[in-house]
Picture 1 (cartoon, helix red, strand yellow):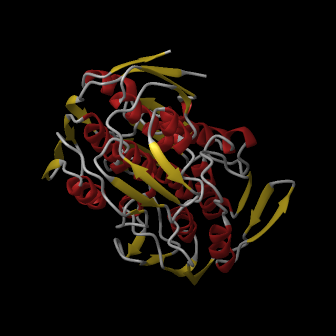
Picture 2 (spheres, helix red, strand yellow; picture 1 turned 60 degrees about the vertical axis):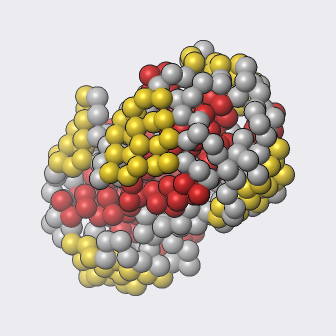
Length: 415
């Protein structure tokens, strides 16, 4: 188990290169299994979740090769239908291989996925759509067995615009006889990135950026080369870090259009953010509280940005109110921020943050990916020394995190 040692109190200043999006590359890697072929994925972040996805592909009989940000995958010889439990437990996105396995083999055996503990995250919406496509499934001691003699076209109306369910159903729909229509589909930019990748492989999908997707099944798929979009959640984290430390950061290879809700919130708080087509320049000298900050599906305020922005608002002038509408377990970072001196009253879904002049160092334990990032941000703005343990959470989603922060003036070391 790793740890970060941080001495806070220094403004962050410098340039940050935004890596490829974690939440894009994982469904893309799963989708390579659906049709079989050779794929080259560029701008692939060097994070542990990508390593897990490649391990899953290898366990299913695929060939994988990595060279920095380039990943080569050959799924043509895949033959296994079962994902080892140890790999399923490593990340939530492992569930995306369910749709890919059904599309390729009409069969899938797997256990419940792991990843960050963020409250109830059932896969019932995934199974709802797959059942309408003709799949049958059963549970046996936490093992999920899915079978489909032939997937068929249908209309799936999702009760909630789930990103994971939308991705899984899109991938499975590639093998359907007839058209699949997904209503109330998620509209996140990562969905659009997956659609662009699938189109590059020969899929016929209409509706990018809307809540209604039309997927023409049984299209002839082939290998391709593809570059993953920038990670908007990584960019949001560094924007929050600039605000918290009263610093100045240049975010290179970033897409401001994907982050308007976060940008607007920080600008209302007093930050100056210059937006260019592939770059943002963030500066903050004085931070004011913003209320309310309500998480919502895209294009609302993203749930993944809630914890990092809360860490920044812990030292803002005034009172900020957060409302979490997506995951019930998104406030697990609050006790750690309190131990650093933050004044926060929180329930499962709400938090009232009264800004203090300065936080102080403390020893805390990362609870999840974004909660851990919030603790790092708080430690960077605090007086004194902090130690953050369980840094494997951050390594799941932030490439070169420590090196990047150090290049911008942070006093941070891996222990």
